[in-house]
Length: 406
Image (tube, rainbow, N blue to C red):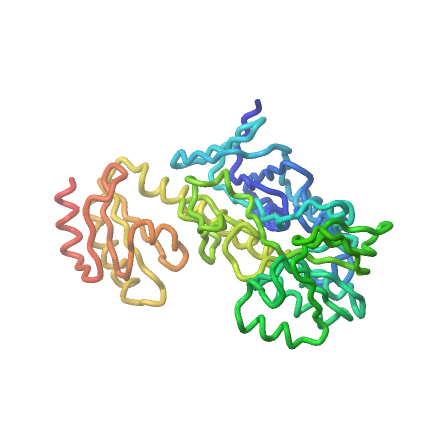
């Protein structure tokens, strides 16, 4: 079992992880991507891909090869392994794989979410060849053709109505009795009034058939067991998504569906662990949003490393008391206070250290020190906060507190 040490470990090689690898490696932090299969994620199974900005026509596998090469160009490494745990060791994280361990300063989780599959004959074989799980990705391939939609929840009906903008007909396969859908009443009303939508009740998909592409869908009536066949050029499954996060329970916060909770910087509730792509709570799950997540998380991670290391060197590891003044150039009075403090603290010479931190450029450290407004002066001794002054900061107060520390 090998033990790797890197600044940044990325778990998952989908679009979010690959974008993070490009940004991380390019910023000169050592970066490794751990992927249990081949890099690329779900999009690598898509034969035709037309909605990525600037690339009006490409294939998923070909495009993702380019992303991997791009990351490798800047020095990102790729290791094939399956991660089963992340252990928070404080300053570092231990990423535990089935075959290797990886020690990192920061971790980006990019494990993705998989469409729930029915596993019927032909579903896997014809995926990307008429079998789809994403209307936004693939609906325009079925211009004036006949397609089938499986599911009756909000997503299925919304996506089905979206597909009607392109397809000739959209036949919805519903498990329930005639007239019963799992979506909201408003969606139900809109769907029933859409002339392009047809309905098959009390039924499920039994098989998908075709010679290299979808040609027909075999249905089974769940009441009678009777089989029937309808001709179709494509079939869309909307029976739910499954985030690949079961192994992360108890490690980082997730919602009741298993999606990771992360803020706009892709930060989770654990310092130094970020989440990107389809596995995190978000409005739109597409390659473009996963790539944006990856860029944001890697940039935030690089800043995290430098902020943490800089603060450790300047403040935590000092053998003398450290006075940290939080300021911001948008508030000139805080700059004036720093000038006054520097002059007043000269009397202490090497017995103390004075550090100025711009809250705008060091958001994490400011949050870590619970700086809610400025000016704020925080006093450290032996790497620990021992006192502080918030908002009403007088030079004489600072001097007196320092004398008490020496």
